[in-house]
Image (cartoon, rainbow, N blue to C red; front, side):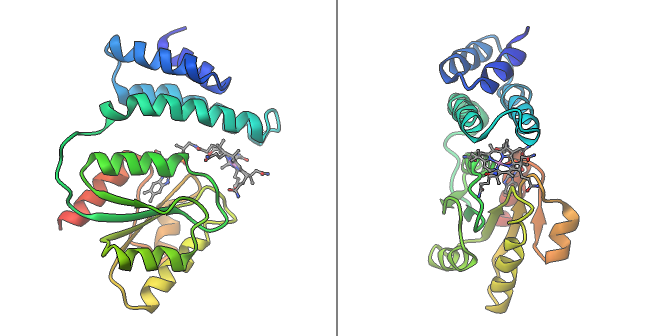
Length: 209
Ligand code: B12
């Protein structure tokens, strides 16, 4: 088994110390941080997701796997982001109301901060009113919403409607596993991107324009 397969496997078992050790070793061997994230940690999480869907694992196992994933991500953080870049804009970020998934949101935050953006992280289960209120308070450029459930993605439309009804000019970015470009257009949001790295690139582009 190579490093990436081993990382994926230990992540699925939720063995955080082993994941940390292997991520460090893989970095020392010169394996790019992006590959460790995508082909190691995220690959492992997608296997966990399949098993979860098929009732082969349950919430506690998924949470333990998520903890192992976060432990690995922390080690990768300095390698995935650029240090010392100047703040270029402000993003208010959160997972929408009714939704407690935050692994993807946290990756988006990390990548955005790595591009020098100031990220106000509202956490999970964030109501549309809170997104808007915080964006006004922090004079944000962008409101970024994450959703992982088909039952909560509709909350994104509520955020868009609230922003538009108040004639505010925040750009609205959306993302998360069930979201796509078509949904973005349907609800009238401004931008969708499929992953954290492209989310950070797009946010920087918006703030720079
Ligand atoms: C981990 C997990 C959990 C953990 C969450 C832990 C945590 N702290 O986040 C726990 C165990 C708590 C959990 C609970 C539940 N979960 Co869950 N969970 C998952 C799982 C396995 C992985 C999600 C994940 O973290 N992926 C890794 C991250 C990195 O990916 P991501 O979030 O998609 O993010 C990437 C992109 O989408 C993008 N992105 C993310 N956000 C944003 C935002 C913006 C603005 C942009 C531009 C981009 C972007 O960038 C990220 C990195 O590239 C998925 C399966 C899956 N395949 O997605 C199920 C899944 C999402 N869960 C599911 C379900 C059903 C539930 C529960 C309802 C289960 C239950 N019966 O209790 C509860 C709901 C709780 C709630 N109210 O939210 C279903 C949803 C089905 C559906 N169609 O709606 C899934 C798909 C599993 C399945 N196949 O059945 N879950």
